[in-house]
Length: 250
Ligand code: ADP
Ligand code: MG
Ligand code: MG
Image (cartoon, rainbow, N blue to C red; front, side):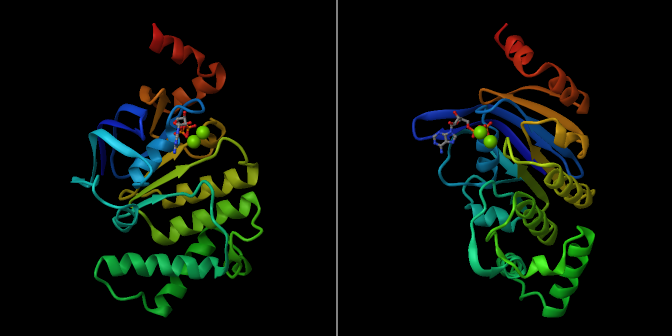
């Protein structure tokens, strides 16, 4: 599904990613961990196609297609979803209306008509029930006065509604309380299927107690310096990142 080869990327004259190789197959959950500043968010932004980052070398293939020239929006239409680290507030636009628009824009890009209102309603019911989202929440203005947990709930609802092929969840290094953790984990575990893949980016092992990854990668200084299974996440929780840095520098 996703194949990243020798990816080098950065901003202006600063190089951030220095040769990333990563392959994600349908049905897999990959966790990317690593110390602050190692390039985790940059990697997710580059996959999603954020314009501020420049790819200088290497390639990103999504379902066999080189996506480098595609805008973020086009990548989203192909089924790449990136959670918003800093969601914007849109007064007057409800949680539901925002997601309806996103779905219909995706359909339009695929040459399809708008989803019939009846089907949309059914989908909204199905997904909100699945994620235990209150109906009242769906009519609230997007992100206006949302708590941390509510922002997560909105994000996961968008993900469930859009049903992306590849979901990338970039979790901030702070602010994931138990409620938010549960919402994210629950959403990911329900999205997971043989045709979907998930990349979870996190600084903390805690989230991985709830989402069991098939692979764990450690990013350090713009490179994946270690890959393993979920045991690696436990090892990091116990020993921190210093031993990996030492290994790399040895
Ligand atoms: P992480 O998510 O692992 O904490 P980031 O990808 O956010 O790391 O950042 C990696 C490095 O790249 C940091 O040194 C950060 O300051 C730098 N960086 C990231 N984005 C930008 C940007 N838009 N402009 C300048 N420097 C950036
Ligand atoms: Mg950071
Ligand atoms: Mg980050």
